[in-house]
Length: 453
Image (cartoon, rainbow, N blue to C red; front, side, top):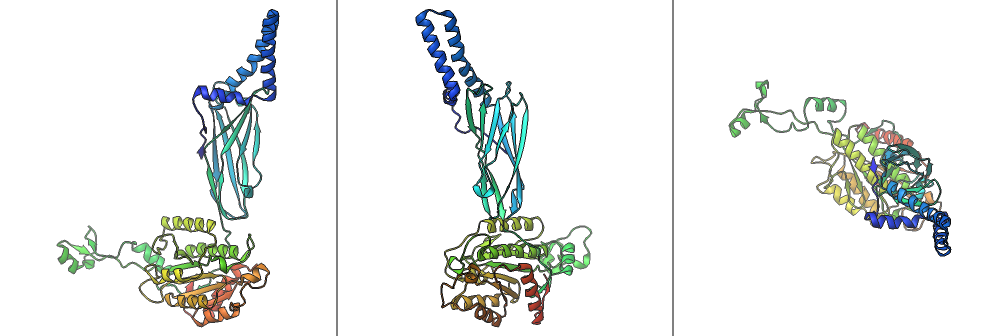
């Protein structure tokens, strides 16, 4: 929950002078009439008219003073639930106003500032709030476009019962709604690239041996003496026992091509948005299947960790999933011209492992020329298995190809398959779950060894 604080509140005297600017037309008319009546009463020597003039002049001033005191004794807060939603889903925003003054408020008008993509700007009218009272209102926001959207500031407008003064207060608190790409559940299929330690047996081994059981450790009471590591005992001068060997966890990289020149069109139904949503679905599915996963873009940037780090298990895996989805929520087109940075990231310290054939690569490519197709084909050498979904962006946009020198989708698929990829074309509006199923049947049908993913 974010609490509101007054914005631009100066000293008491300065704030009171500023509050005078909140006089409405009616309030100014009362004040002018009162001053005019008082002057006329003084000139004419009419005591009764003087009292009427003073009453007319003092009434709006008293309302200004009362609202000025109430203005800074009304606090606002906002609660956003949840803070991360998929595109097309709704989030609920709850506003709460607390009156901590000893005076009741007048009419309250609330307005929360939201981006236009989240819907119309919410406005509420609240009746008087008793001293120490509280009022709560709520509204819902949704967006079909992924991104990060600020909510706030909350603006509060107070009026007195006579309509003589109207003051506005802005709160400084903001919230941020993160709209992540839509994901769809994927069917379990068989793909190549899993390490031998993957699967149910791997999970049972992980339960028996901790993630840090990779080197000898000091003897603990109750340890089996058959596990004593005599070489380490002689080296360290104390009794050391062998730790259980750590089972190898399967790794997977999801590669997303974000190059501006590789995609055409914009909007929720564009090829790029389909690729982002499909990449998000792959990440979620692979994490659910127990993979250590990372997100890699054509720029060579890796999420969740620097240097090509993969997600780990348990609580850290959930944090990594949130980080990757937040990244996909705001990912845009890059200015890159090729896939070389991504290739270097896979070949360098952020590779799949020491042993060849370790790791699974899921790639989403836009338009590829001959050079980039050849570079993508060489990426297969660094993996145990590779699946590519290739988009013909001109077809998605319903336009003729911008560069007739580009190889056709069939030619790109043929070159990738020759290099060992399981490559499929992604036609406009394709259901990714069905393409994922076809990728599994294609990879398994070729005789490549793999496990269920």
